Image (cartoon, rainbow over all chains, first blue to last red; front, side, top):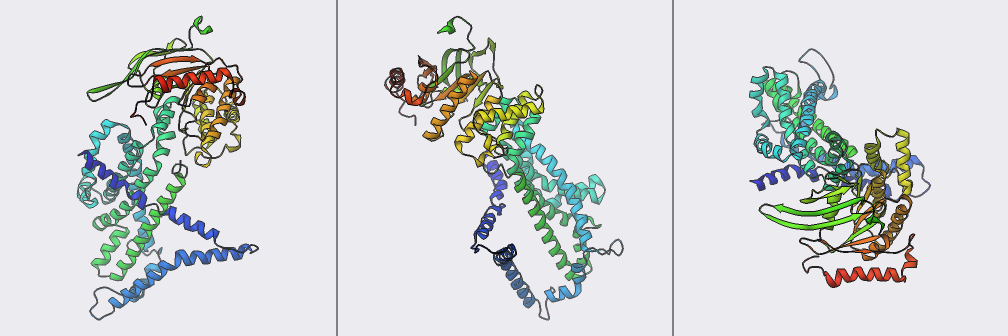
Length: 310
Length: 270
């Protein structure tokens, strides 16, 4: 029993290593700076070289693979019996969605940018609540053996419930689509935050606790001055997994709850057989999800810059 | 010597410590009695696993006693506090705070209500100057060497104005040259501030060089004080002068004789 629990914790924490590509990339960046530059070059030339180097190392490979994928897609779906639109058809029929993300022509005829923003607003509320409650509950579980014994098994069961399974129950409870969608985000994002925070708190070195004890820090001082900074790397791993799950859940939730939002747009486009629109919407979702992940990651890197290396 | 006339500053009174795990209990320390005078420098020496760190943790209050009591100025102390500041073996600086902020954390907590902001700032800088660390105020622990970290740890402990400074193998993790340098610093601080210091060590030379008295512990389990050696060397002591000093050599021999002839390390101990 205890062993499986530990395994689960590890499974949830494990992405920490997967999710920190910043380190290796940092090293390549360093390598670029060292790259041979004859002394006496002007700043402009240096910057141009640096930019050229960056293009070669970081920008070119993904551009090539994207072009290849588009080509394969084009060839595969160009035949007369193709079920999906090829890239050229997507561009021809849906380029307005790409070129004008923020147009506004009536309550349901709006740019994808607005829809994404509506979805992001829901994610912000749901994820924000999940972060606050998750860190608080995680701290409690990490600090108190009895809270862990009581709550951990419950959480281990609840966290395996798929996001959408919560939707009917939250619709019944809130009797409104918007709070229900927010609740689904909340309940999806909270588990990795709780579990990672708890692991982070449990891993606070005894030395820090001893320092706090000698100084007689009270529990509030201990929470803000020792616990949070010490557990920050773990907490940010949880937040990063949480924001990813939120973005996964919001699209699915919006498909069912309707209204404005990128998820409902896809559902609507499917019902009116506008396949090119769906393809563009997927692109938006992917890019926004990518940016969200990077944002939380970057925030984590800033906040934990001192903690990682001791 | 003169300690017999007045009440001791710190008194360890019949201290026992057992660790209970499940149904089995191991007695680590047995009947420790020791009186320490104000301003005295006492080293506690013994083999690994003899419970000397446990004893220091008991004095600091981080570990509760099983029986007996720690009396500081005739008051029982049984929880940790800044009056018994600890210099931890592995410095225990908070890695997300700078050198200045690490000391500030202690100063603001201990003197937050008694000193003004400017006075506290001055006090932080004063203590860091005492250990010669003013050049690295804004560095983080990861950016300074092991010896410097230990200096900051000492400054943090001193900044609490403790009644007793407890040093838990403070130089154990340092190379020999850095260690000698820091030992000199500690001697200098001790002569200037006249604080009471208790140091755990397993380095015989360090114990003889720094201490007024050396408390030698027997091997565990149920370790106790085997012998207390007074080191009658004049202060200030200088490393170079002592190498061939008769008293120094004699004291050193006495400790070595205790540790390696009469109380050999148990074969299991690493």
